[in-house]
Image (tube, rainbow, N blue to C red):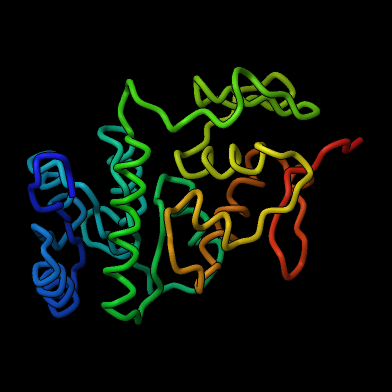
Length: 238
């Protein structure tokens, strides 16, 4: 909850009335202030009008799909987004993460899990505010160079071989966490706790999907998979 003790606000966007109402009722019972929308254009209007703390956003929407809605939200007023998808293809999930979604849930899902994910996004947003003047805590002072990968933690910018790379907030935080100790392995549970502020590390597919998206941008060879454990930022790659 924010410093002024107001109820955290959530915008729920889904074109299926039963799902939309069920989510809204559960979040309201959990103490959230909830606004709902049933289409992409309505989602953008309500987001502009209410400035929610979190957006729960279905991928398949009339008017504008959830991916485009997420892209426009992040370009205008960055907001933590939990995407809901009935799709299981990894490509669709990576696209969603690439346009700025912080997390996702595949349908069908439990309301308990949805509430837990929403609270985790709020905790993370409070710890790492996303506005024009505030950044996440610097994990390494000044620019950091790992081979041809340059990470400026203060400016939250990344270049690869001198070319600027655009990362979402989550992608940058994930890369910065791995860069804290180049070459050292970080488990999925550690990454969930550090980057997503999750206390329950039972679901790790979110990490894997974000890693895939990050690899597409900085180079697959730069992030090493340690099977059954987690990931490491590769060093000394030729």
